[in-house]
Length: 127
Image 1 (cartoon, rainbow, N blue to C red):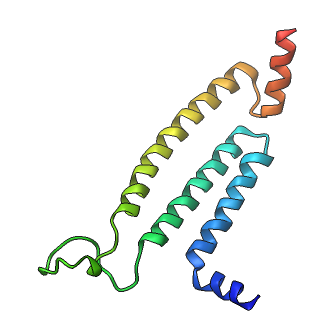
Image 2 (image 1 turned 135 degrees about the vertical axis):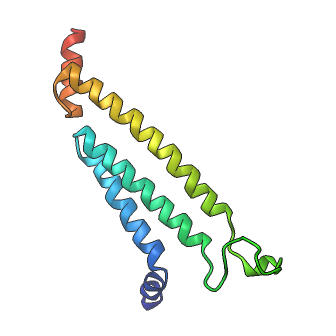
């Protein structure tokens, strides 16, 4: 049992990323407010980026920019996780913008941000 806890404290970035993901997941599924759902999704995104950055970093290695003539791959960190994080940030900003625009449209139409209330109103309109 102590091995589990020592692993959690050794990999504290990964542990913190998992806790953040759990917080975002809880917000996404338990709150009926659309803004809080968007915030939960953004927290989950951030947790994934932290996890990728933590897994891509290797203690004692440099950024993959050759300046001193050292071309050994063992001297540098892997640039792929960093590229994935940058790409993910661009995508999540775009998705957030679309979700906020849709939330504004829903609010203008139904005068509430509560998704359960919007479903009730839509069901009434259908009958």
